[in-house]
Length: 409
Ligand SMILES: Cc1cc2nc3c(=O)[nH]c(=O)nc-3n(C[C@H](O)[C@H](O)[C@H](O)COP(=O)(O)OP(=O)(O)OC[C@H]3O[C@@H](n4cnc5c(N)ncnc54)[C@H](O)[C@@H]3O)c2cc1C
Image (tube, rainbow, N blue to C red):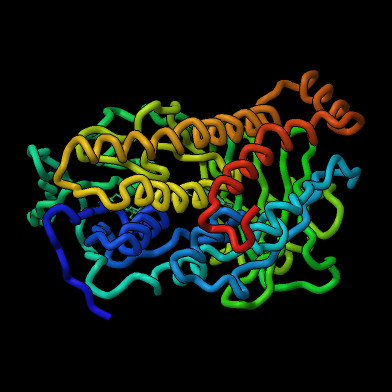
């Protein structure tokens, strides 16, 4: 299907071509708007490795027409210490499962497979590659968008979905003041290995490191996502031999962690990330500009939800502007306000909670780390933190998405 409409009052320009941008594009198209997505690279491509997507995100993707069959592998997650002592089992919420018609909560998917499925839903003629956003100028009833290749377009609104170093967000809100969160993540995936129970995932800690794995699907085939988190800082040396480095970290860890090292191709299946954040923002929009995803809230992987929240943002933004003539500045401002009301506090909470967990597990000095471990080993403190700090709010949010439920409450 090819698509070229660009009608005044309906024109949504999107800078960036990642999950936030594609979700925003699909959500506006679904509501009858004209969409153009401008990606600076020669193709829209998901950054590597695997990712966990949760129930509300899958429900949003389903609403765009994505089949959830074989999308990923649902997982029961256990938190443990390095010696294998169980600290908690993350519960599922039966009501959420029933209303959404989706079993479990977290699904492991290979980013590239999930993103490819999203791209397949975008009609031809919507995505413009090799278009790097340069700057915008707001007019009374439109916004002019310029690209580094010299091209220009006039739209009614501009959505900044151009990631953590977003130029749209910088022009609209100033320097993001990015800071290192104190953690480095080694994210890897490998093909299926037998002997690990089905639908079983583990997040385990010792006093400094986290070592974890989840089952996942890539192109319908089973495999595993596994990762190690270590304390880090700006300028910390990068090990020359990542395999030796990770083998050293995991040497006292119980199976299956060491087995993943043996079956993973370190040249193509391992990614290293230094994790940056920005201070929370109260506003994600101004005039005819709104932002989604990492452009306004890069999330530390402790929430396993950054891609998910970027996808949700796009859905909520389009929903908030449903039926609006986008030339009308007051109607646009009102729509942006609804979007921010629904998203900003919730997302900031998740971003700050993820940062807090990262600091708590990797940033405490030795005596406090020891005390933390004793508390987590022998009291329900960790279970309480995760249930109230993360799951409860996410589940409430999911139950508010009434239009995406297959069975009404
Ligand atoms: C190690 C790691 C693990 C993670 N694990 C998870 C997980 O388990 N679950 C989860 O949900 N999330 C996870 N995330 C977070 C997730 O990857 C991001 O939050 C998500 O990719 C953000 O999507 P986005 O569309 O906002 O930005 P991005 O994915 O960064 O996409 C931005 C796009 O904009 C393009 N672009 C940039 N500048 C311009 C410009 N000037 N003009 C045009 N285009 C431009 C880029 O090329 C890119 O295509 C993880 C992140 C990391 C680092």
